Length: 204
Length: 204
DNA sequence: CAAGATATTTGTAACCGCTTCAAATATGCA
DNA sequence: TGCATATTTGAAGCGGTTACAAATATCTTG
Image (cartoon, rainbow over all chains, first blue to last red; front, side, top):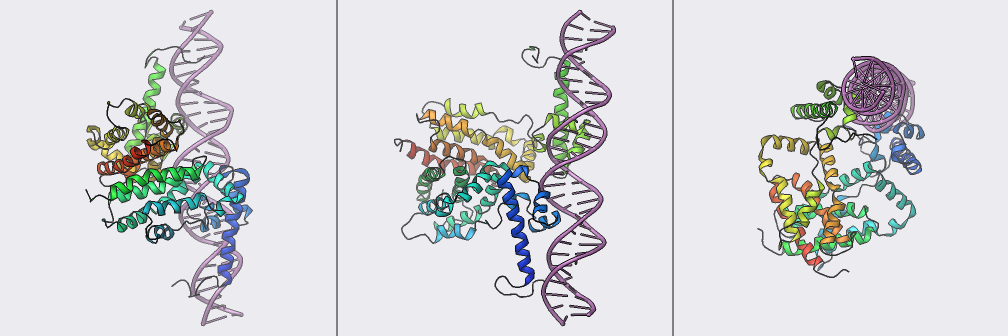
């Protein structure tokens, strides 16, 4: 089959070149997007700038133009779920999630001015906003199941599903606000009440 | 200037023809979409079927292909806001909104099989789901202001904004569920708690 | 009703994102 | 070295969308 073993990480020359090419494309894309705006830069131009053909570009990013921006961003699902399951003892689920969400809008990484530009680009570009939200919302099921598991309800429990959806939606909401940290805070407060009072009751 | 007075409704021959053309386009589009699926039908074919040029089609629907499906749907903002402001005395805001939302997923209109097909088309087509949600979310600001107004907080109050966003998001959430009525119900329950306990406190 | 001012429709050409495909080209390996 | 396999490439094309100028239809006014 494909893939001669090549254990753990970057081995052959081939792999290295591939990684470099991918990087070159993503870098050029982001550079141009930040310079002149997402819509003002064509995929042909990016390919040109990265010195590859358009075919190659799409070979590396089959998910489309938007994906060029989110290369190696890939917020991972495991961490989200762990935030719930591995929370310090005594800490409530809403608290744990709040802490996790706050990390996205207020952390050392967030205060890097380059990250601010990046964030602004996404927020200003509807296509990127949508794409970002869609990616993030992919974790809905996993979160819902984790929540249900925590309180001993069936994996498809409606309350858990709704709470998961809303929780994830908090980030998109916050992103559209002048003060994202405050927004996350208030939105969490809102959901917190509903969760605790609803969950401490028996299943309907 | 433009528009000789022409009070209240359909006057000249021109207006009538325009309305007819628009209708013909939208009808043909929906017919084909339902028959063979949104992605399997090209805009050129729709124009052909409605006996207009592609230019004309886009002249009537500059918002793009998706808009062909939502012609004269246009859920109106006024009704949403009124659901809050004109609610029966003694009824809470969450109750009023719940009733309004339930109307979307459970009403005589909803049980028309043609509407079910329509709904299924949207739900099955990512582009249409997105478009629909975006349209619906346009009312966020109006709802948030109405809410703030009801409880005497500043128009840009964060809790009101969050509550408005989540409330509107309920419909998209419900749409993705096997039993939308139950979903609306549970989601409303969740938000209800947060609203009442948060709102009955003084501004932070 | 004839004209002229306006609005609408049309065809054409083109751009953009994206896909397909077969022909190079590069790489890894025996 | 030579062959199998990956990768890259260019060209051609599709579907959505826009720009534009040339027809065509409608309305208005004399």
